[in-house]
Length: 422
Length: 178
Image (cartoon, rainbow over all chains, first blue to last red; front, top):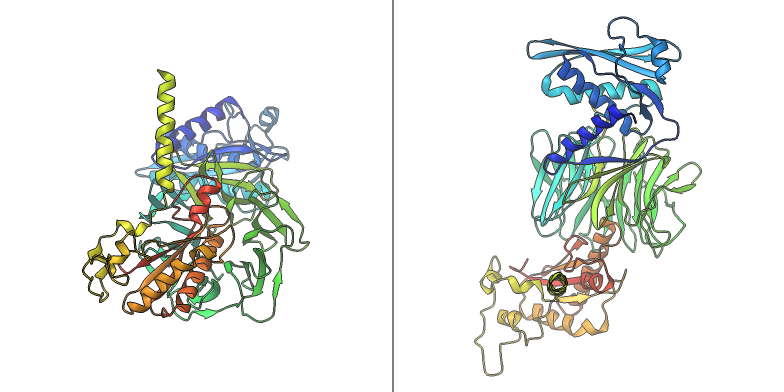
């Protein structure tokens, strides 16, 4: 990281921690082969041009796949061809240049991405927007650049949900993927757990204890309205959306033990999905809707199983190493399964390749919980504990890139990464 | 001077920890009047020379009565009711039989280690085990609801075994107490 981008990053982090209950992100590990990229401040309107470029730089650097190259004093090519040789001499393999034109209260922001090695333009986009949308435009541009240079969709304009506990106050918050723009969807004196995004990204299902027992709600984030999905006798918990967004897999105890049911999002038609002599919990649909992964102690210790979502066929056990494997979360690309294992008394984030069934432990912490994949399957967000305090952390699926997200003087837990922006 | 300040801080934190870990049933915070909310409650019997009627609501508040205690504690990852809690369960089972209109909610709890949802299910199994034992005494399905608070409402918040053992617990609460 050069000095200038360090200053920008430092200023950004300071701004983030100044706001109350703001998530701040610290990069604690990066990929081995980062793409060196230069992103000078955009030309034209200097204020917006600096803001947009700062968001793009912070996003790309935080991904751990890019290294920022000093951009001071060189023309970016927003007017005419960029001086490729000069950028190459700076060590940049890629370059993004843009310009912001003000027209009254609206702005026109356009940019292009260049391959410096090949001396070729890779593409570009233009956006009409207001000043208040500057960060959003920055995230969109970062998504575009990320996809052009890595071949995968970016997740910078997605949102995350999590629960902040401050004393005896619980807040279900929604923030941009960079922790900025945090909003409280629900505040309560009783615990809130297990938030889960609807596939369309408009709603959250969660479990709230405000009735002094666990009850499942679905909360529409646009209208702020919510309704009870399951409040049967006993406990109601662990909601998981079907890929079509019409049903939830849930855990009910109305017939005795904690067992899996399917229920309509409107709370109608609860039907038993599986039956076991012990605990069945933590259901998750596979992205194709075919399977439901879950945790069960039917074999004597908590292990991960899957069952066909139509209930036809048997139950398949997936984990066999150790006495504690819980919280299965299939990746959005359907290739992997993230879960928590306890190999030596510590609870560790683990991934399984579903084709080969090979497993890999991704962390060296003590109390990992609640993994949640980014919609592009590259990063996994999870809860852990540092210094007795709950923080969120993210790690790339290959274990190389690591980030820590924390809120000052509060416990953060129960993260859920939302779907791609529409 | 500095040493004194540190010693004082330590003493204060020990007191705080002890009070946080005390095994006082949460039901003590409730007022007797609230118990009758929503449910026709038996008339509290007058206190006699022998003490309160063991099956009256007043017995729930009487430290000398068999139904004063409400908590059953469990071993790690277990939901078997230990022998030492059999008499407590029997007393509450009989109380429910003698007061067919009163309802009970059992809140199961788990210690903080591991998955929140799995711990919720563990707390549920503990609450269900207590409910089943009460029903063997004659309590009815309509009277008793078993729910779980999982690891979310710890009575004790230190990360050690003496604290965790306080949190592996089921609490029997009567109408108006939850």
